[in-house]
Image 1 (tube, one colour):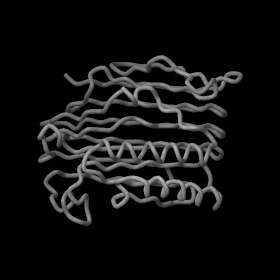
Image 2 (cartoon, helix red, strand yellow):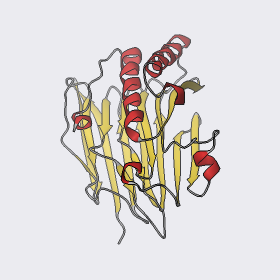
Image 3 (tube, rainbow, N blue to C red):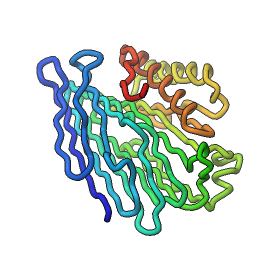
Length: 276
């Protein structure tokens, strides 16, 4: 039996508070809205009770953020793509930001088990005046458990329509990609953190974001396998390779904190679930 779950999450500004409302079908839930940094920013934890996806499963997450609202979405644990002998498993997230909206899309990592057939899609529609700070983390296999990624396929798709598209497929049989010096070079975790604006960033803001990211990278042990760039006037991105998730996530959190301060003048309020 396969699971098909969907969630519609809507953020609205009501007086001085960002309020989240949602509807769901299947095993996908939002926990209580939290306000650790005051009414302006609503923190939510997205929960998938089964804990993972097998062949044929689909998770469909739709988010809207209205003008003046600021939502932060994270998860309590990794998304797990388990072994599949048939249809692929699909996680699809689509967010639409109105002018003046802010969204922080910060799920924990996607774990690709050996022999998975999976696709992870993220689409962000960011109106002029809106901004999104988010990340994506993918781990191949379970090195700590002695379960390498030896078979299977994983497709990653990140898109800002008309602005930025990154799509790639990793086949476990492609050893040149996984182990070659121009590929993952033996690393089994790849991660990106990105700042996306609905209109071209000024040169001052773009250079400030790049400088802040590079300072965080230079201070981190992964400095030799990470880099910051601006592939489009609306986008700044940091890409990271690491042997396992933990150091990559540490660097992404450092860049997230630096960008929150640099781009929004806000302190980094870590969601409680990151410390569990």
